[in-house]
Length: 251
View 1 (cartoon, helix red, strand yellow):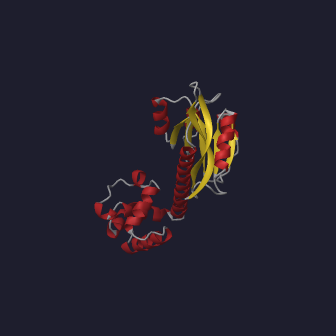
View 2: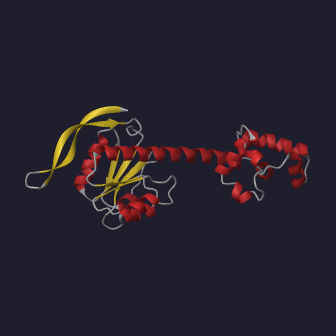
View 3: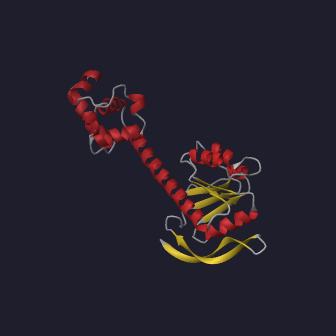
């Protein structure tokens, strides 16, 4: 974590009672998790001064930024396939920020959202957070608050992308198995012994052992417990197993 000195805006109250913005030098933490050529932050805000300010802030820590005025513009844009997040205003012309959150709810990997708004209420923030938002910031907010939220959002997106890549690789290995191996793996993770599987499939125990060894190799499973965890990640157990898993298989 590196530290740099930047001028940030703070709100102060003048002699007349008017709220003013004053720029003062402050230390801002710059995280390697946030900066980097591979990450991008999308800003969706209809206020041009806000878009410019956030673009400048995020650019100062090495992040690429792409800004949009409306949710519709964001949805229509072709976005790069890289770690990212969205800094999203709640109140927008046309689709609101919460509407956009619902629109992208089924996107895989999930789009990580940091909400910002000048008009917040508790039900609104609760709704946004329950729907998976990373943070809900009320304007005006400190620069470091936004940087921390963006860091967390990009870290979440990286983790989701890693998980998706691992599950995709697992799915590819599973699909490379023969139909008979699919039958065997279903019964193996259900906890059946080789002789029980042989009886279930009406084949020899030697054949079951051969299929089992081959599927363990192709799935790159180090143990039975490892194979069971793979089956769970592939969502095979609820749909394919009619037998409860014995506790011994999870040890």
